[in-house]
Image 1 (tube, rainbow, N blue to C red):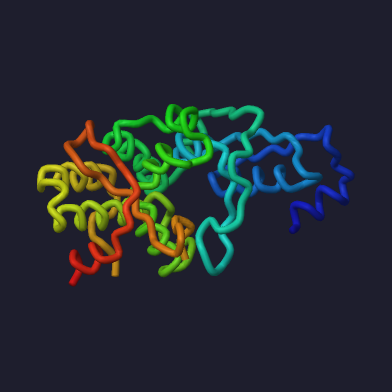
Image 2 (cartoon, rainbow, N blue to C red):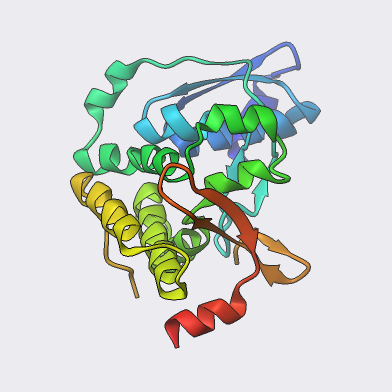
Length: 235
């Protein structure tokens, strides 16, 4: 609400433009504020982290995390007028934050998709774009369970990806070579490979997981309701 209070006090009108300079969190907050203020004003993103530059600034999602859940508030598909990237800002990042951003490249390898291509084909996430959510169901649970800030988003999704491929191996959907490849990439990036001790991907009261089936690179990701499979894999 402070953003809106400041905008009102400064007499910002629809001719003005919001500028979001910073991480993915700043980009999401700025985009959501721009979408909601006066029913929408223009905004520009200047992402300064690797995750923001290659992932969160692409696709038009502007989401905010309330204390009791992950990305439950937001204005989907509200795109910035432009995204301006200066890669020199990456020199200011800690190694942990750079490693977190490399997770996006792992997703591209696993699903054989580039995000901007998927967004152009399925902007509103009604089908194909959901492949980008691989590892997010478990990852969001990690973030919520441990408290926001304990795990960087990329670290949590990396842990979620490990849990997802582990479950798929137990179910017989993928072979051990894919697990070894995933773990190898994560270890090189210094991301977690050990599974740790309210998600929006629910339809008709049933949890939907984004999973892999098939060889690496040519694999397809799809929605499945797998409550019983989870019980089988981890019983």
